[in-house]
Image (cartoon, one colour):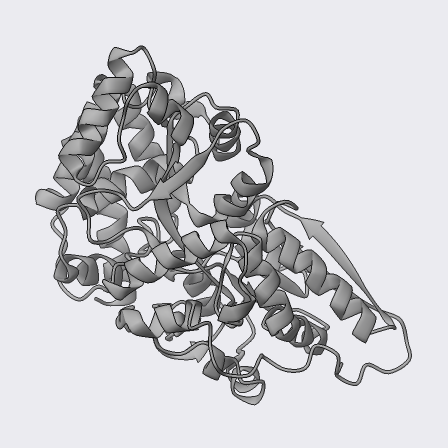
Length: 435
């Protein structure tokens, strides 16, 4: 895998926001003949998120430039696609284009199984390879083992993302808590809320958020060689080393101290986000995919964000990717749709709606909140601080991670036992791919 390096490369792609041209002319369709056709599209972005708004506009642009084509959009849940993709894409029910999670355990696995179309020729012909330089290509390419960073193009990312700390400014002010600059100040702030009878951190143990907190805590003790070993198999990972041990021990300690609710093990991400939007928690530690929605829906309090104190790296990467199933009967239409999502018009809309575009126009990003988000992303990438996600390295690892953090929340297993459970499928996968 090619490490996301050069902060400048990714930052330039995100908010130099590319001096290159857009990925093709959204108004010039491929020849489609006169027979009515249907493009079957799946994605899991909510309608009021930045990506949801951008993709809805892209559908309108596509249908306007392809008058004999109807887009049949089906909204799918992240978990639904995560669990059923291999089965669905190997059937006649496969869509023509689909948003899918990037990384070795997901897109990499499907590419190795022969379920995804090779996009290399289209990426070169349509200029996507120029719009997605350096680190942005890491999650687009997979080798014969399904390992990201090199090989053929199997997906096209068109936004950036990272995990941050969102906070309720009104609650911080009410409890006289300042925005923390260090990890010690952060835990002191959490203590202040607990002493006031307030659970500070909204959490969702049944889905991705809890494992990302565990991983973020591990990253406070991690350096680049450890990250390369864990994500890129460039060295041996000691699951009982200081990084994961600190992450597991501290996460469990945060539950005991009341920073995270003991009943959060069964809560889902949507409920966590809604609870924060309703002002029930002062903090939520989650991704930039919430940013646009928070900007649209939070009306009753002021909010802001900051990078996790005490860490030089945060979970993050280029965004989820468009993939074209090998069984798609309308690959030409799928490529045209991807092209439209890479156009400056759609990228600028994404940027002004609270997303992080990769091929927009810096001068066109006028929304103040959106500028704040992109500036933070650039700060993180300038420090080469994108650390991918903890569930990426092995197939099925997402569910293993969910179970592990739930056991830490419930106290049903010790940290050492949970880390043993995380080590086995990781090491089994290394043996399977020949590492």
